[in-house]
Length: 131
Picture 1 (cartoon, helix red, strand yellow):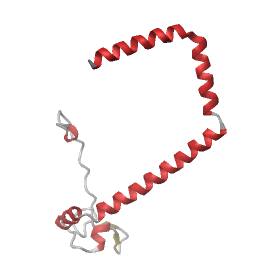
Picture 2 (tube, helix red, strand yellow; picture 1 turned 180 degrees about the horizontal axis):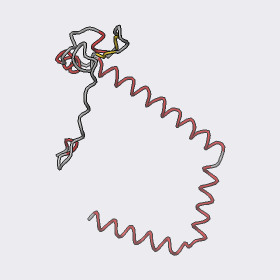
Picture 3 (cartoon, rainbow, N blue to C red; picture 1 turned 60 degrees about the vertical axis):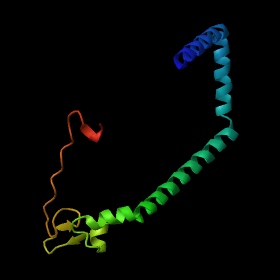
Picture 4 (cartoon, rainbow, N blue to C red; picture 1 turned 180 degrees about the vertical axis):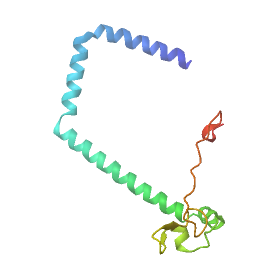
């Protein structure tokens, strides 16, 4: 019944639109344009946009905090190699050596200055892990 209803609605819309003609279309476009360019509407749109950005930032911070404090995340961090619970390995801080090279706790074996080789992207029918 969904396809049938959609086709009937499209047919009715086409007939009504054809009857209204170009003049009515131009009138509707003009009205919407005037409304959208009204200073009061622009002010409200700006306020809504600012509120949306603030809410998104707050939600992101809350999600980050919740993930950081999650027991599942903590369990995974403890199982990672080289994460002996020290702050350098969990935050990814770099340490300098006398030759000016630096190592990162997440850049391979401890004390290694050789960067890891990137893994090429998966190809084939199951690329991206989707089934």
